[in-house]
Amino acid sequence: MANTFLSGWPPVENSDGRKKYTLSLWLKRAGLGQMAIYSAGTSGVGGSRETTILFTDTNHLQLDEYNGSGMDSRIVTKRQFKDETAWYHFVFITDTNNGTANLRKRLFVNGVELTNANGDFSTNDEASSAYGGAWNNGPGTGYSGSIPSNIGAKSWNTSNRFGGYMAQIVMASEQVYEASTFGSFDATTGEWKPKSDGEIRSAVTFGTNGFLLPFSNTSYLGYDYNTADRSGTNADWTLEGDGLQSQDNPSNNFPLVSTYWMPHNDPLFYVSEAGLYAQSQTSASTYFGGGATLGLAKGKWYWETEGGTAWNGGAIGVFSDPQNSAENDRTCGYNTYDWSYRSDGQVESNNTTQDSGMGTYADGDVIGTYLDLDNNKIYWAKNGTIINSGTGWTITAAASTTHGFYWPGQGDIAGSGGSYFALNFGNGWFKVTKLTGTTYNDAQGQGIFKYSPNDGGASSFDGSAKDFLAICTKNLKSYGG
Image 1 (spheres, rainbow, N blue to C red):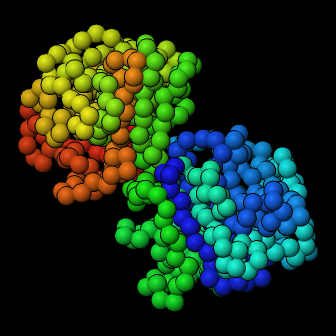
Image 2 (image 1 turned 180 degrees about the vertical axis):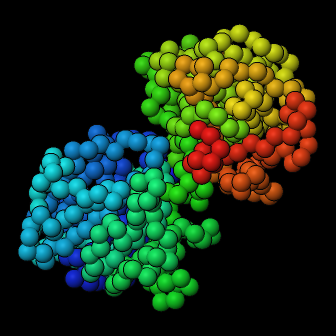
Image 3 (image 1 turned 90 degrees about the horizontal axis):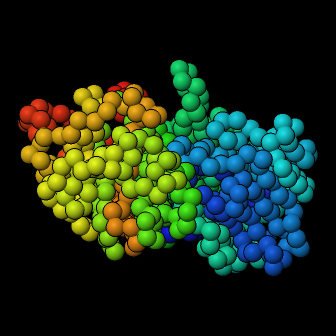
């Protein structure tokens, strides 16, 4: 989440650890622009020691090292990292004692090493021999002083916070490990996938100030598990902000509200809270409210949308061409093949009312959308009760739509003022509020929802029992796309 980061400092000053270490982490972006990934020390522009890894304003990856009198090294990738639909795995290696200059700073992305020889960097200023950076310092050492290291924010002012998701962060102090220590290529799909925490613990010597953050403890996400039972661990991190444990992870990817679908006219719609809280456009005659990052072609799917504060009327459903809707400032349900359930109680498609009197909804109500692409039907529920007595609406088969897919989406119906939408694709929270009390998984055990996506053997959908699934890659692989 954009207002969240982890703060901490290694408790022991270690000069060897400042010269040699490996950092591995998985992350998924929700939003673009400058974002800090990992930072230690004080601001380099003031002549102090600083180490920072960040995405730049133009979404390139940049590694900076200041040495107290200026820049010691900088690496900037030619590649841009703008994909909000997928997880990235980064491995950063520092070994300034290495006699070969281009091996002192190394970078792996999804199992593949980026090198200057392959033309992967626009800037490649190598680190000085035996230079000790700002990482792996304790407080008061003269390098980081009383300023902690931060994961997901700059260390000296907590700015440029990372927006999105992080998983399985590993620091191996005084050690060098290549990407194959932390991940492997799937023999069937060729996909780069993470190794388990247990495999990491078996393969890695964590060193003086190393740690393993799996984010597995919901009560304290910053716990270090470099030993399975936490015995002897000394590198816990403090969660700052509203960070929540998510079902979204490198092994099971969930959708977000995409910032790719952008209106051409100002003001743009806004996406925040890890890509799951959207504000539609706010000026007159602008209605777009965002489409999801994953499209659907077959199968049965469920997701939830809650109206946020400053609610001004909404339309919740599916887009067939979210880019066209964005470019033309159209709400959900306006264009051909689109469908929406509006807050005024109307069901709309192709800018035409298909039904009315379906019940209004407002700020705080939760609308469940059930999309059946096996039988080409769509249903909605308000606060867990299916509208229209379970009779759905017949939609065009996905294969016959503009792009062969439907995308979950939303927009407003009032134009000026805009509306807010909190999405739950199974992550288990709305905006920054975790679901409490009774919650539900889908029939495959995926997702955490406020209301059930499962029929439970009844006949709620056109007189039939239907089980709908969370939109995630585990389900998509087995049941549709």
